[in-house]
Each structure stands twice: as structure tokens, then as C-alpha cells.
Length: 271
Image 1 (cartoon, rainbow, N blue to C red):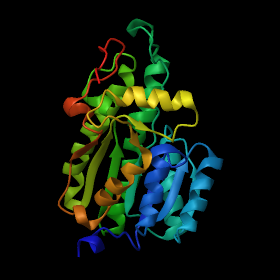
Image 2: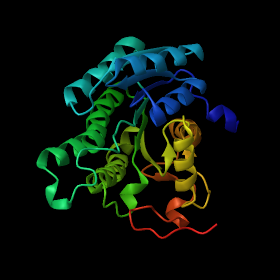
Image 3: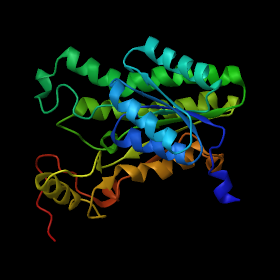
């Protein structure tokens, strides 16, 4: 019974930032659970690879190059999903960029352009996609799911990337408001809040050493792996979470609960 509720057979999921890292792994997880997937990102080659891997799992997939900073392209993304599969059920807004413009700059040196680009990539994109998807879901009349991806940096000081943290805090607040506005249409809206999660396995001794060093700040004593977000995405997209709405789910190895965030002045961690 419970495992059946986690199935996504017959569902259509739109995933932004699906070309690599967390978005790619969540797209593949949704496909493994039975969903057809529309893969979106700016880099066509990357999302075509993800789409190919989705079809290898026995599901249908299309790749739609999309710059989520542009609301018209987000509208076209939803239109492409409907043209390809006749419906949508799940909107997973994962697109974002942590190494955004203005990182590590002094506060007074961050330009208007740096600020706007960071906000648009990480927050406006979630708004554009939710607006386009909810319009379609309401028209279809069968309810649906919107999942936004934020970041643990939204819940702590982030002096080297304060605009990114502010944008991701906005994603959490947006998700809560969407849940209240769209609940009457049987559209649930929830948020995944990753902590330190490696976008890909380390490819060198230097990367492995960096991962081990940063993992020491966390109670789990390691960084998360991208695939670990997949099961959470399946849960939130499925009927198993039918009474879950307006919530943020932190997946960070205990980082916010008991970790020490490396912010440029953290003490050494013994052990």
C-alpha cells in the first residue's frame, strides 16, 4: 500500500536545472518512480543526456532548453510539456546558481546587476515556473504538485553570498504563500532545503580531500550526495505526501541542527 502510493505512473514532471547535479538526479529518480520527464536547463547537451537516461529507464522524456530568468521561456517550457505529453502533474523548480555574481565581494561593491542576476536565477525563476505551471494545473483541474528547491544558506548568515541566501529565503517564503493560495485547487507546494551536497562525485584527490574536510563540520561527518535528494523528491511528488503542504524539508546531514558552517572564520573542528 505505502509503496504503491510512492509510484508516479502516468504523471508528467517538469524539472528545471535537470542537466546536472541535484536536478539531474531528481529527474532520474522521478522517472524511476514512473514519471515522464520534461528536462529543462540552459545547456542543451546536458539536458539531452538526462532525457536519454530517462528513456533508458523506460519513461518518455523531452529536453527543452530554457533560461529560467526569462518568464516567456518558462511559459514555453510548460507549453512544451503539454504539447509532448498532454498534461503536467509535477513542477520541480531546481534551477539556481550558488556561485552567483558578486560572491565574496564586499557588501558595498556588489552591483545592481550582480544582485538582480542572483535574485532572478534563484528566486524569480521559481515564481515564473510556479505561475506558468499553476495556470496549467488549474486549467486541467486534477490538482498537482509544485516543489521548489531552496538552500540551507537561507536559514543562516551567508556573508560570502548574501544575495544567494536572500534569494533562497525568498523561495521558502514563496512556497508557503503558494501553498495557501493554491490549496483550494488541490495543488500542493513544498520546498526541499539541501545543505552541503556534492553536485557530483569527486574526480580528483584534491576534490576528495576538500569533501572530507568540509564534511567534518557536519554531524553526519560527510557531505551529502546528489542522489540522496531523489527519494525526498519522489515522496513530495507522490500521493504518499497527500497531506503535506507548505513545508520545507531540510536534508543536510544535521548541519543546521548541530553543524558549524564554514563561513571564513569558523574554528577548527576537533576529531
